[in-house]
Amino acid sequence: MGLSFGGIIDKAMKKLLTFFAILFAYHTQAQTSDSSRVLPPVKPVKVSHAEPLYLDLVRDLGARKGEREWNVGTSFSKHGGAAHWHPFVEYEFAPINRLGLEVEVPLQAQVPMADDIPSSSLNMKSLKTSLQWTYAVIEPGKLRWRWVIPMSY
Image 1 (cartoon, rainbow, N blue to C red):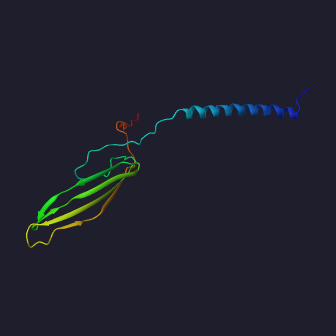
Image 2 (image 1 turned 60 degrees about the horizontal axis):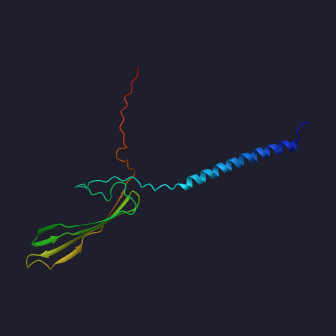
Image 3 (image 1 turned 180 degrees about the vertical axis):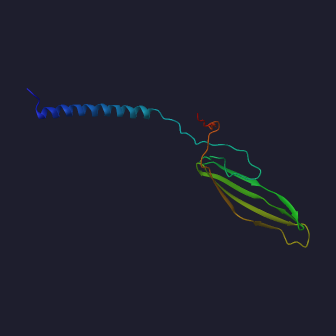
């Protein structure tokens, strides 16, 4: 007349197995459909800037891993009866995203213009290093300003 205890367990097990079979089939389908599409890698946001006249930034804001740049410059001066030449070599690179490192080697060459000045010389004045980390970069056109004026009645 009624169901035995074993029959109740059998029905519950069948329902549970059916549930797990459907769940497994859905999970398998979800995995295959996602893996068939390969999305291109997304590059981090980068903001190019004009070189400032006073403060030189190491890399652009939001520098990307692998970027590098060489700079060479010079200046001339004349004082104390000698001509001075001040060349420099600078190497900038980004070892990881948003981190810029720079190494600069300034030199000084002296050429005498009178007999009482010692002979010519070329000296390395120093070894300059700098580091620049960009905490956050906002994509151009994504920043929105909103004014809120609180009012009460």
